[in-house]
Image (cartoon, rainbow, N blue to C red; front, side):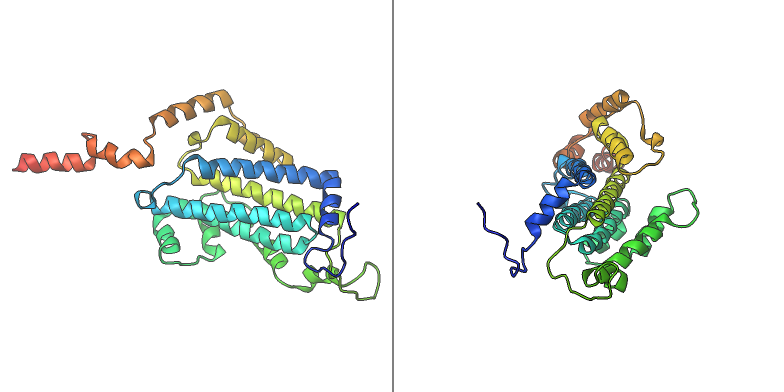
Amino acid sequence: MSEPADPTNYLTSNHSENVEATLAEDAAATHLDQINFGLLLAAHVLLENPIDDVTASGVNEVASVTAFTRAFSAIRAATVVAVHGYYIDARALVRTVYESAGLARMLAKLPDKAEKWLVKGDWFPDRIVRDYIESQLAPVGGSPYQAFYKMSSANAHPTANTSAYLVFEPESVRLRPKLNPQFNADYAIRTLHEIAGVTLFTLFAMRRAIASSDFLPGWWLQGLAQLANDVHDADWSHLEQDWKAQNERYAKLNAATVPAERLDEYLRLHPNSFSNIDKRQAAEED
């Protein structure tokens, strides 16, 4: 029989109890499955085409992969923190996921900003990223990205609203600091649903960051559509397509694409590469 948890161990007290209680909640366990599946989809994008030599890759590709990996790490961290009962702290990490994924999407398309971010260490405020993303969208009433950022920022800051539940007891005037994390089913479910939502946001950002969705296999896009339907009750019909035809397009593109590590050799040998055309023109002029 295991020894009872030591309540004076303020590093781990209540952790295992909170994890067990979270997993016992069907809705919370469902959101954990959604988050894990989303991480599987994200991992495929990050690992499918490894960069063996950063000097031979575009700075936008390197920067985007770096920022997306930061988002991936923050999703995992937020989930671990949430299942242990630190709900507000987990929601603060949600903002890190949102900022990292949105930034990665922008850096993938804007090499000049990617170079400033990666090489010079510049930091871009969310406003710049948000303006870039929304410039590509049809006008909507208000800014959903700004609204989410304001909400996640409020959760990340030590406001009274985010801090009060740690000291006040429900329907009581007593103030009792809760120094060990306390399981709360409603908080757990809401927080994990929010993490699942920002995981979905990360996957959409990845899809937009890639040159064409045709470079994604049908099972990935189908999985994204299914996850979107599972996480949020909305009209996702625009995500549906002929998955068999998508797989055929993906196979053809994959077969025709030159791997990055072979690109220099390919361009050196191809008669119509710029360097070879330039050499022929120079020879003709001589």
